[in-house]
Image 1 (spheres, one colour):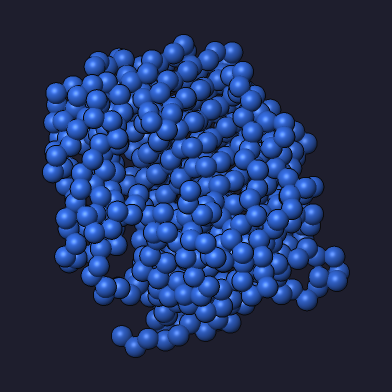
Image 2 (image 1 turned 180 degrees about the horizontal axis):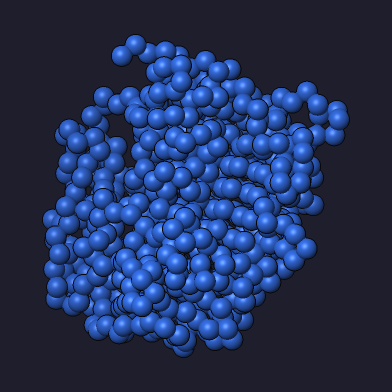
Length: 549
């Protein structure tokens, strides 16, 4: 097929049907994945892990196997043996490159905690297994605490008298208190945890209703969310979702007076937004969000009623926008969305959205007041967009007091092949950053009339492969733009001298953080279940990761 270079001024039509990308012919090992990323066993049980190599024809297939805790589980040539109660990480490491590895988290439990549904409260004790087989909720004024190492298995599909997928509805307080060593896993039955189901939306998600008080997610893994709502879904009955139209987000919130802390957690394999907050004071920091949305959907989606810090998150292969920052829904009882978004790393965002040109990395709109800076946007389809900025209100453009700049838009040399109205196109990320999009405002001639300078101070790649962020272990010019499976061996820390640390072409990261560049909850944090949580301070670099210690 004849290749036509995308006409950047005509690229408004490139949305329809992106389909593939060029392959790197280098056969040196680039990645390892295991057949499962999580596994539950009882003591003495065994399980065999299969290994996939990238590329498949690599000759470098020798592995060194290990366990983070041999008192919990051991491994030999991919065969796991459960020993004692707890959580262990099984790792298969390349014998030729120790920075390349695959991981599987193994939970060993002596007994089941039991089956839960309806109204719940109290404590789900550590290292137990909880089965949820029907709609479940924490009532107003009640609390539920989930301790470290708990595995929550949610029945998929329509259930019980509701005939709707399960949602975990909270009108009181919910505290999921995992640890780095023993995270909490919220998932479906083992036989459903497959690559074919990554966008199946097998259950709903967590919903903070009109009166929820506190939500805490600390070291939690949430997967396979995004079920289509039914007429009797709890979120539909509460007026938060629409039946047969909306998919429940991994976390959906609605109370502007509620408090939310989401830290050190993973949201993956979702056919919905990972987070959709329509209200609450929130900290969202140090999370991994990947493989989100088959045809649409965003990673972190903020609406009117929120005051939120979004920092140090890694977003990989979100179908549309990694961050959608909007004040839609603003009114007399729901205040303007107020957002600080800094030091996030966004990778491969937007390529799988083929409906229109809306998705790409960050979307700022509809009266939101946001400070967006020191973010690293890597190999994503577009840079930050601010539609209708000349009309700043909850129906059109963002608040003109927003501060957007000091971001780094990096582009590898990978090409994405697709179809648009004019025929076949071949596109690299930098072309998406530099074409004449009406929603890009860094070159707008009307600045003198009082328009904000969007991304004027940002470092924007204008050629493939330069400047190279110089990652510890991520194939900057090798991972296909449409790749949606996250490889745990990737390491987005950088080497000394990286432009992530010092900038390039006269553009540098922001290095002072007062006023509009200070986090909302950095000095005075949010008190959740009696403990104060503070947003981590901004760093004078682009992205979530600096030099590796």
